[in-house]
Image 1 (cartoon, rainbow, N blue to C red):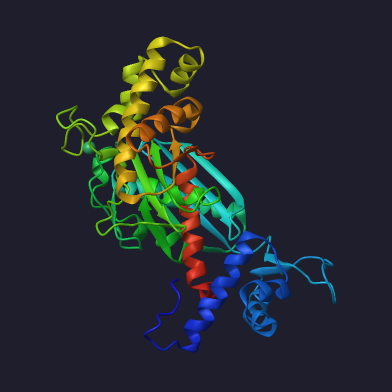
Image 2: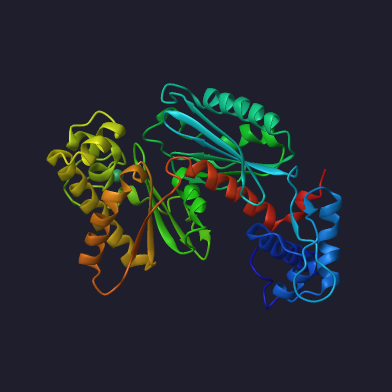
Amino acid sequence: MPPPSASAPVRSAELRRHNLGLLLGRLRGEPSSRAALAGTTGLTRGTVASLLDPLVSAGVLAEGPPSRGGVGRPGRPLRFAPAGPVAVGVSVEVDALVACVVGLDGGVVRRMHRRREHRTMDAAEVFGRAARDVRALCERAGRPVVGAGVAVPAPVRGTGPDAEMLRAPNLPLLAGARPGELFGRVAGRPVVVGNEATLGALAHLGVASDFVYVSAGIGIGGGIVVGGRVLPGAAGLAGEIGHVVVERDGRPCGCGGTGCVEQYAGLPALLADAGADGLPALRSAVRAGEPVALAALERAGTALGAALASVLNVVDLPAVVLGGSFTPLGDRLAPVVRAEILRRRPSAGVEVLVSGHGRPAAALGTARAVTDRVLDDPDLLLRP
Ligand SMILES: [Zn+2]
């Protein structure tokens, strides 16, 4: 939540919500005593206790054993309760359903990965089956669900329960679908909906807070993260890095344009150029030093570097994170991408990192978006 505006009076309820969100954000980073929280936030110890103690009573927070540090009586560190509320992140991929249940501190409680061909299903079947699977996953977790989020491989207009999928080149039957309406029934709580790469970017806040995330699957998606928040865009199209043009009259693309980087560095293009029938085969060929595979990776990395240089010329961020199907190729791909970015932007440094999450990043980042939403409105944790 943004700090209260300087031009408007601050109502006590807003101030309370802001301070509570601040404290919970600190506890998401690490367990901390009330006294230590008072010290790092500037709130009085009494205010910290009055804000947090109701959450201890409600089972959202728990006290750890006393730990002595500094002077006075030993403090009891507060942390998110091991049996407390969880958030659910779901990623509907072209050929799989991925989900994770995470605690409010980000710890993963349950994971699910199901291969599922979604290209032939309509929206009711895709999201109905996903909702049933996710409900069963939540029951196995056995903890209260405070919210759910759904990531989809398409641009999305809006972020809430009525958010609408726009064109979905790889899942055309889902264009116009409203995934949140189906998932509202799973959690009965706030539902976040977004593009898989935009939300996947949020899974990487542990390594950087200002970066461009680019993720490969059937297509290429991305997210622009500034100050730990992902840029949504006015029409849900921010971070559509796959459609940055690297050859003006180049290969035709599913978006209707030509020469988009997705057609040179996306997984289907990369596999075709390398003559490989899948990512494991490509990875083996690259490791074996096969010239055709290495040349294909070099071409893809150069095209991706050129596209990212254009993006960085606009947003001027210090780091790039390569994720999705780029992760298993990252050790070979990242140096090529970095070299091309630096060739085009010699006066600016850039760090090219490889995601440690790979494809599960979308579900993890979606769960993170849900916990962000809850920390922005912490009273959700006290409502029955
Ligand atoms: Zn395109």
